[in-house]
Length: 342
Image (cartoon, rainbow, N blue to C red; front, side, top):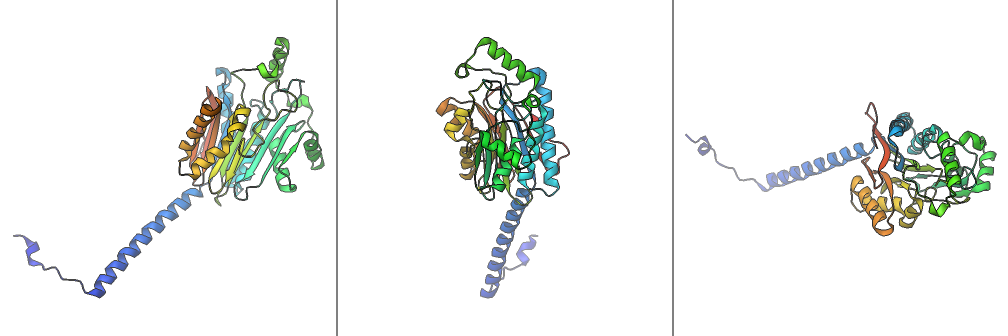
């Protein structure tokens, strides 16, 4: 027997119909609000991505690079979990790589054509779009920290050369002798280039490690990006690459995302690569897709080579490069260990 035949559908009164409609509308609003809240919570999950330079990395030092970026990511995450800002995390992570000696930043930087270490760095706050940077800087172990001091203690964005060094001394930074910034690897490379009498414009080496950088999202939803480098081997004194330039070496905007670039600086400058990647995210691309699109632009327009790390405003990350290798690491709150690769 079909039991449904025993029931008669009762027509809804106008009042019941209104109540049903209101209930459905309220349910849709609740679901929509729940989804927004879920996305908001995801976006507030502290996250950091670091890179140790896009180029080639000889097999014998791959582990050193992986260990270096892992330690940097862990250090940056520790800062985030202490309720630190994204700026704190970026600075702390890059400090670790500047001290390492494996990377081309701080201790371990390339020597210029006159045998001097000249470094560039930038840090940028995605909440305010404030930034600080230094270029052609000598005798400072942590250029990224000096860049932050420029951002926070002056009305300027970029200080260079002797002016930057004097600013460092006036604000308590220890002036580090060049000898303390040298690594055995870079001294050997410099002597070989001098022996071969290679001019800067002729220099090409597929193996040198490059620029280091970091991007982070803190628990308040604020983004930051930073980049630090020793530049090209045997570069002309005073040469400045992409690293300290807003939109080229790094960019951060809470409404778009954060990016740090690495690679051949002149091509990155021409394409304003970090800003391009952030703009792609602002147009709706995922973090990973934005990275890939930006790298395609770099290759197509200027035949450039390099790499990018990004975080979007929801905390999703992306990594892309068109060089043989790039050491990078990712860590988010709740992860016991960072994920790293080359």
